[in-house]
Each structure stands twice: as structure tokens, then as C-alpha cells.
Amino acid sequence: MAQFRGSMKGQRGEASRLGSKVSGLDAHIASWSGAVRVRLWYDKNTDMDMCCVALTTHHGAGAYPERMLYRGPVSGKED
Image (cartoon, rainbow, N blue to C red; front, side):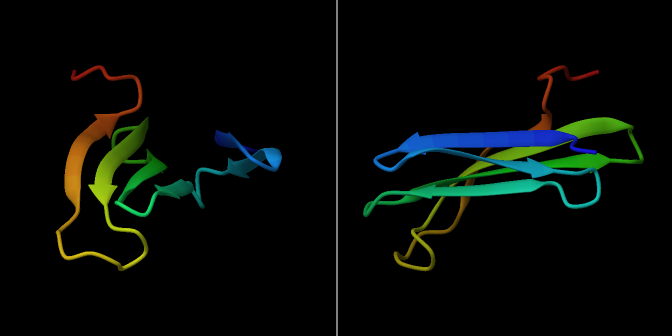
């Protein structure tokens, strides 16, 4: 059963993907200048859906390190 759903829309229409508690979901959305990476996963230790949002490079191009913008519960709640 899907725990996560991702969708994107661009020039060729819309596409979506599902992720389970085991696989999670990972998206890399890029421009020529840089990229944004979003990861979703289930943390069995906390029983919470977690996420990481980071600025990164365009699949290896560029010379700057990944910069994390947020890492924590998808809900945004910091219990």
C-alpha cells in the first residue's frame, strides 16, 4: 500500500509516483542553475513520516555542497 504520493506537471503533462513505507519517495527537480531534492520516508523509531528538503546540484554539475532547508516531520510539528 502507498504511504506517499508524488506528482509533477510540466511540458508533457502530469505524472505521479507512489512510495511505500519501505521504499519512501525521492524527487530531484532541476534547472541549469541548480536543483531541489525532496525525500519522504517513514521512520519506524518515531512512527512518523519524515522529510528532507535541500538545495543541491543538477546531477553532479556545479561545485557547491547540498544545503539542507528542512529535515523533520512532514507535519511540521516539532514535538
